[in-house]
Image (cartoon, rainbow, N blue to C red; front, side, top):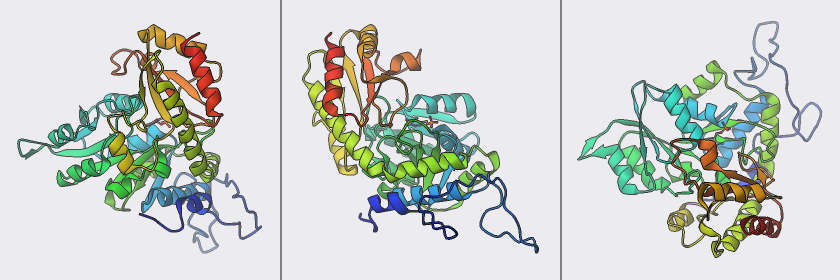
Length: 380
Ligand SMILES: *Cc1c(COP(=O)(O)O)cnc(C)c1O
């Protein structure tokens, strides 16, 4: 579904215009925490107090709603603060369905901070399992929220968003999709039927590993979204004006970065696919990937994240990461520099991540240099 102006144009302009007072083309950073009233006590603009709203956050929210094709967006201080706001909309005692290999931080958030919620961890990429989680033997299971991540982290499983959103709607559940990894440049879950999209803006939106943030984007600015907004404004886990300014600036180059990084990931994935030191390359753009067809149907590219499973198990994987010279050994993703991470070590005991798995975030270096680095690390 084409929306005019096109995504690239909106990423540059949505929510921004030259400053009417000075003509400044780049937006100013409004650090003020409070806004003057007229002698009559009226507000002069839409702004009152920084936590409730401010010009930089407003510009970012307008842009994010526009890019995802939603009616409204609410920005948070981190991706997990955004996910937490969505979980707070679920009534106490409510049932939540989450992916079996949900992002580690979301799993901890559910376990530690939402003990009243009943959470079913389900292999949502298997539609039968998704259906079964929502209703069993014809009886509704009263699920309040289905959380989807596609691709999943770090195993890159692909979930059919349209099918799961449809099942959720029939079951009376909200469907929220974590779209951090593929971003609206490649995949727009609201257009596929999801109610909410959540993001860690710390990743591709910021894009330079120097700012933290999160967002909830809503298909409709309805009563559910009003509750998310109330959590944002009253609990106050909000990004600072400068954080918003950095993330809004990041969005201007988002389409270019995501596509170039995904093209680099393709070169890396194909170069490693036939190597004897690599047991498996998990990148949905490979025809051999079990989610390839669904990914092709619901996204316009296959992203810049991939995982590889290497010979030698837990220790072998750690040694490969240890020999990398160009890839930086660090957590996180979505920046201009390529990162490599041994997830099982990070996630610790009880992690469902295979011990021989290395997760790669492909940056903007020349892909041939990245391949050379990985080949020397795989066979020293
Ligand atoms: C990083 C990440 C998060 C958490 O975001 P923070 O900004 O670190 O709080 C949530 N979901 C996914 C898929 C992520 O990669």
